[in-house]
Amino acid sequence: MAKQRKLNVMFRVWLFAGEEKLLGKGRVELLERIKKTGSITNAAKEMKMSYRQAWQMVEEMNERAETPLVEKRLGGKSGGGTIVTEAGENAIIEFHKLVDSVSEFINEQSKNINL
Image 1: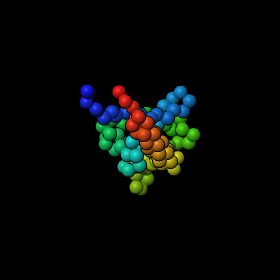
Image 2 (image 1 turned 120 degrees about the horizontal axis):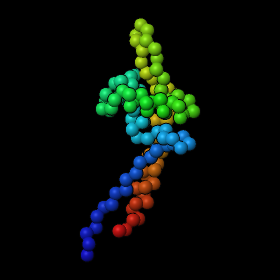
Image 3 (image 1 turned 45 degrees about the vertical axis):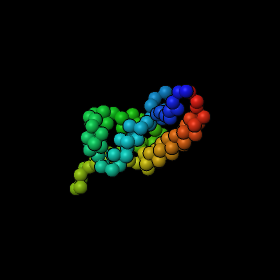
Image 4 (image 1 turned 90 degrees about the vertical axis):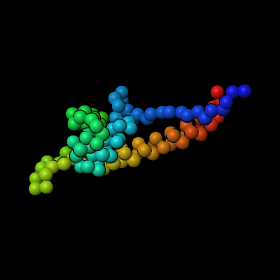
């Protein structure tokens, strides 16, 4: 008789705007780090990616979303910075809710897999 092994189901969630990627795990992490640091540069460094790549991801998200998810603030007395907009914060929350829901469904369904 064969040994019974626990099976794991792996998945990734991507949200598309039409045919183009809008949000996925990495992009949501970038938004979260921008929110935390107030900077695309610092968020990129924390994720070990280039500023150029992070900026390109932000630009793509902003272009594909109904309203911008990230806004740059120009300098001044306290200097400039970057903020995650209300739409961006909502996108983070909704993405996590969707992933949690899909994960719960997959975990429940995978209990019935016998291989």
